[in-house]
Image (cartoon, rainbow, N blue to C red; front, side, top):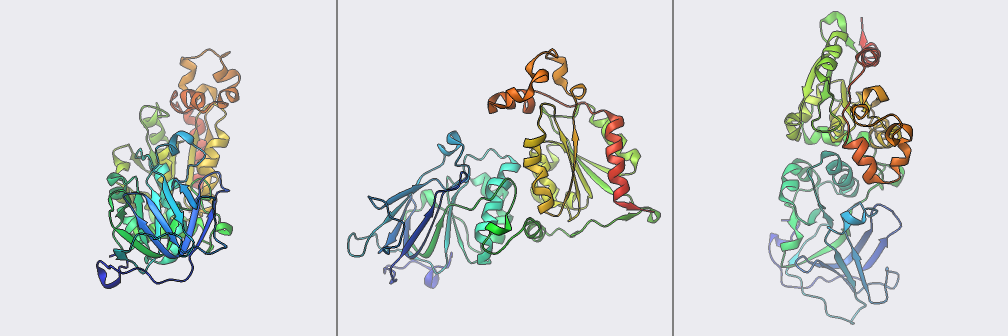
Length: 405
């Protein structure tokens, strides 16, 4: 288990050369410390010991570093809910570290599941992609160690975790043994929203590599979108993500009818349908196009075949840039095409609530100064009534681009 020597408990210390600790606190998203040599961990006290640290290691005045291993460092309220991991460095013959009770011969990566809300976008962007960046190079020979252990999160992403590590995940918070590793990585590497920057990846991983990884994890059979020959009688498939409560399409039935009349075979995906990741991944992979109002459901674009098309319906409120950053920017790096449909003032239900001289219409950007205000009005406070004629025009262009006669 976890590369344990002789597969069970050991009662001898690890003989190792001088250990080394390096830390990077420069990112606004995450802090990371990597260490190698004689590294010991005691989960219940959330402590990692760097034994006999070298002179060129990262040192603080008291030899202690603390990290909250979750990549949303810029969100103070979120990070306050993340358990702190303490890293203690000791010079040779200065302190006596705890003795090893379990010795592993593979690296460990320590991370937090964070205050998980079940949101699929944050699960992918904040956790799965950073885990892929951090651990993929080990080809399964790495021990995942989780603090703030969330059984629901672990269960939901068990297929991904099993593909990244051949060992059972360790619950750091309840682990009362001293585990010794040749190297430990506290924190996971985050590049940008739902994305990977090859230049920052030690192995040059790309967004397309990540989608290939997911296809392998979920046994998705379709790697590429190829033009549909209409003479064969086939139709391209379009999956439409349907929301409830906020940013819902008030005329979703008409939108589905419009896409069908253009020539698509439409799959309507409500909230219950998208809950089962593995099952819905199979559905999305059979489709050529995914359509939806800005929201977590569009994250399922990661299951599209390469060259698939993402259509993001942007709600009213000068939301073009934040919506593009979330899904538009990552799409090309994943080998996907990206199309926007930006709702007008006539297509938002906000027009039934606020007069036209209200900031919602007169100066939407003024409400972006506070995230709470932006969320209240533009993310949580409106639904969208599509202009069906305009929507049909956009869908028709996509249809023509992926079909041949």
